[in-house]
Image 1 (cartoon, rainbow, N blue to C red):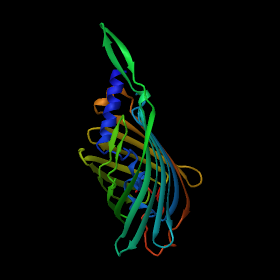
Image 2: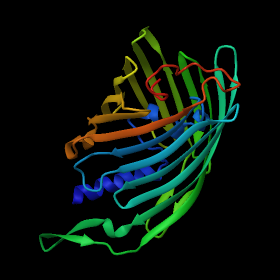
Image 3: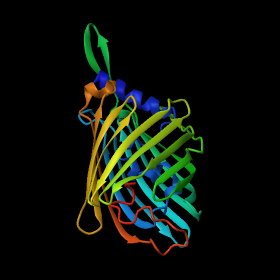
Image 4: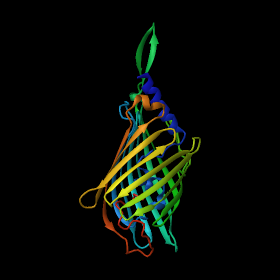
Length: 314
């Protein structure tokens, strides 16, 4: 229990330095959470369920669940909405985010500008913490008593996003409102974060699309994190891939199209950071549904996703 508690406190201290962005392994399906300018850029209407279980086998390990909507609205507009539940040990986070993007067509690519606003509630349950004390040579558990405390904080993000049928590039600022959440038991400082995302489609032939991609994140007071991956989409039905998160994990990915317009993807993190001794990796499952396509009905031109398996699988 002592080591688990120490690890939980480490996670809390990292959050206190401003790491509010969720560490997704299937980051291409969650681009809206990184950059509001992605809203509506696929010219589709999508609903997505996403579940991440991190560091399986570790008591009170992080669990993240989201439900989101992303769609093109009107001629040049996009809207995005997602609801978040995030729990790590004694800390729970609930939130909702609304994103808006405006799209402009250029001869060789589309350019999007986006903003988002959100409200997040942080709950801290001190009763879940246990320490060990030594008395007369005997180690005994020492429980702390306290109430569940919560704070609500607003937030905002902004970004730009450029794409065509071959590439995409995005740059965004998140956590623009530097909220300092403080109770009698804990404090969370929300520092600004910067995100750069990019990818390129290599079409070997009509049945195979190969897409390398990169995601770089940087937050105030934390090291730069780089995620590099490659995906293979075959016959508009199957998706395979892997990615490498520096100093953390190797991710394996597989997905397929289901009957109708449903799609499912699963990924597994092989953790090699120091915490790998205490867990059995991380799991992510994504299920979403594309229920209406706006391709051909917009005033701006975009053929990025014609005939591809998933709008997000670029």
